[in-house]
Length: 343
Image 1 (spheres, rainbow, N blue to C red):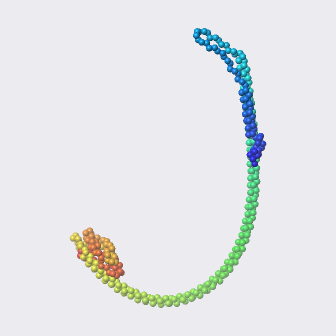
Image 2: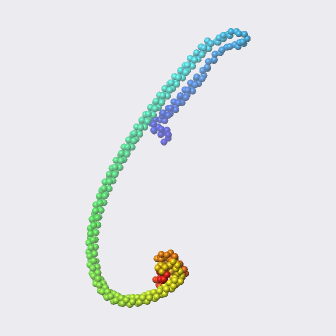
Image 3: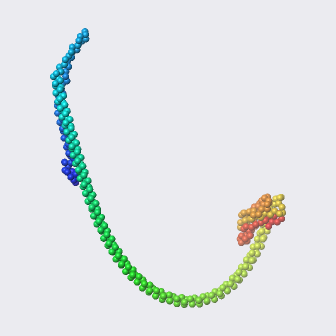
């Protein structure tokens, strides 16, 4: 669809009768009239200016100036005619201008009236179109609601049939399960009876084997008890002999350590026989000193330091090569320093 066709369809009038086309034609007419008026007024000749004759008088001696009388009568009549004619032209122009303004006002009013009617017509058409759309929407809504009611009715009917079918199947399934339960219950009872008989047979057999095993176990326990007792006595005798040997060996090395410390210890002059310092000594399996700690002070700092110095002065202590004896008696032990004895 072209622009002209769209314009004709929207306003309801032909394009050449539209307000825009009429306005353009009116403006062209006004321009033509103005040009014609201007050319008509410019063709009128202006009246010639009135001439004044004068004579130069030299002022040699004072004489009264002559009065120059201009020729005015014919010029004044001509000027009066020209003025009257000019006034008529101006009155015609004003009249034409008023008529033009009145015409323009009438055209403007007519154009506004046309536009108002077109706007009213447009509103009426829009209202009718809106009412038609609303009616169509209402019709479609009613149809949709009717379809929805039919659909819900069909769904309700289908749901009712489905529930009835489900109920029938549930009853059949319940009956089948009940029959299955009865069969399984009978089979279970039969199996339980068979299992009970088998269990009774196995129990009797187990009791018989248990009695035999108990008798064999009692005999085995008696044998093991005798063997354990003999082994325990042997181990006790060996342990006692080992303990005796370890104690004897530890006493020998303890005496050697006391002798070495006695040789390395130099009590201070302030030491008395009542002073005693107890030290804890930790050794390595090689006999090297791992650490020494004062666990009970003598009350005299010089006495305590002399005992610590004696312990630290030995580079290697005599220890047994037997690991058990070393771990038991010489890994960590205490020794007391007293001026009368070293133990």
